[in-house]
Amino acid sequence: MDTTSIVTRTRELLVEHYVFPDVAAQLDAFLAGRTDHYATATTPEELGKLVTEDLQSVNGDRHLRLKHHVDEVPEGDDAASEHQIRREFDLAMGGVPGLRRLTGGVAHLELAPYLFPVGMCADVVAAAFTLVSRAEALIIDLRRNRGGDPHTVALVCGHLLAEPTHLNTMYHREDESYHQFWSSPVVPGARFDPAKPVYVLTSAATFSAAEELSYDLQQLKRATIVGETTGGGAHPRRGFTVHPHLEATIPTARAINPVSGTNWELVGVRPDIAVPADEALDRAHREALAELDRRGGDSPSLAEARRALARLCC
Image (spheres, helix red, strand yellow):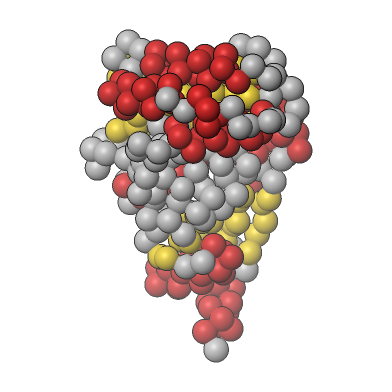
């Protein structure tokens, strides 16, 4: 393992690509003086941990890492991420590992472990929303979701919103451009009725694009967030293979929400209803049943919701 070459290349990528050039300059100087420290690493995994600690020492950016991979990853930009995504896609049922009907006509839809790229998962998302469109209320479970594609965030939001809506803007350092993300006016499959209640479950492990989905829906007041404050990663990143088992992940952009004017970096997405993650589903279900009861109606599902709510409250 050529530690010097690995660290040197990581520093070069940091200076060239990191979304905050001033922070990149500070980190470059800091890493340059840590040669002896890195020389203590005897494995790529150890080196990754040491460098990652230093990379996150200035502003705590959790997307900024020298990430270790057990399996060898191919050369090329984002090659490690693409390799991991392809491996996990089928294992996770295309990103929808769980979908079921709860009592009272409430649907529980889990999206995990990633919001996979649209080209991979659009048909899976469409099928899932076609099924849950018949529910009276929807619980989207992001407690095990570690991130993914902002275009997939826009796709999911398109299934929940009545009209095209500005969700997020990304500022890109490389060309100093701004890229807006909007929900789509047309979605594959069925749209979930925009008048029906939506709840999103979060945990401390919810990260990156999954946080954006939570944050966008919260800012638009389209969903109630239930669970824990999320991890706090709002800077989309690129990955660069610097060793067969090490990937330098460098954030190259930052999110700007059109409602708040800011994002969830470091602070995370704060839930509307704060409960431990393992209690979030039960709490959201109770909230959904209570909301359906308040709205009234005489459908079989709503009658079932009232009976379920009565049992839960006793």
